[in-house]
Image (cartoon, rainbow, N blue to C red; front, side):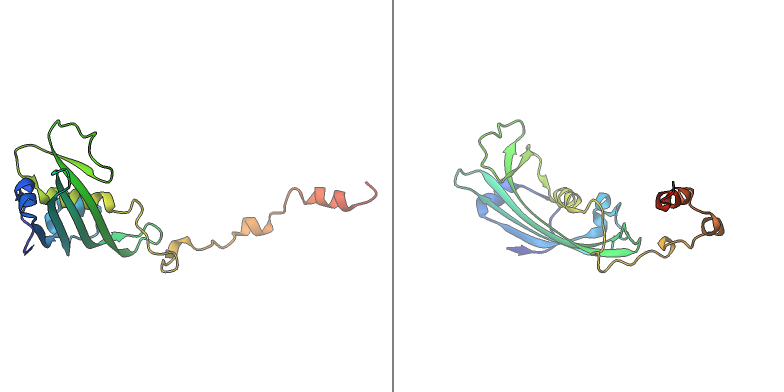
Length: 175
């Protein structure tokens, strides 16, 4: 098992033949597309990849990725720190290969002769794991200052209800 920075490119077939596990870190700032919706790019991504061959001798990658990101809460517009966790299992197939025979539970990862870009794979997984609407837990969320109940204006206080006449008519037994 390697516990170094995650290499940017690997050959998953060779790593699966050896039964290799890669575990390490990536800088959050290196994942530019992921940093776009975030408030800052400070932090590290913890990643673990297990390369193996399954019972059909197919190359399989199991990934586990964790990171804490800061986003703007859509309820109170304050910063919220969110833990992001992603686990995925990939079956590596050649480009254009038939994927109908793959067992359920695997995502298909088509790969030609080029090495696999692990950094791009991590970034894709985390982008898919980000919440659509980032928010604090409801009990932790602070109401924004400008959204309190407005005071009634003078026009609303002095204006009478136009249907109050109907209510009086309804109560009057002589009508």
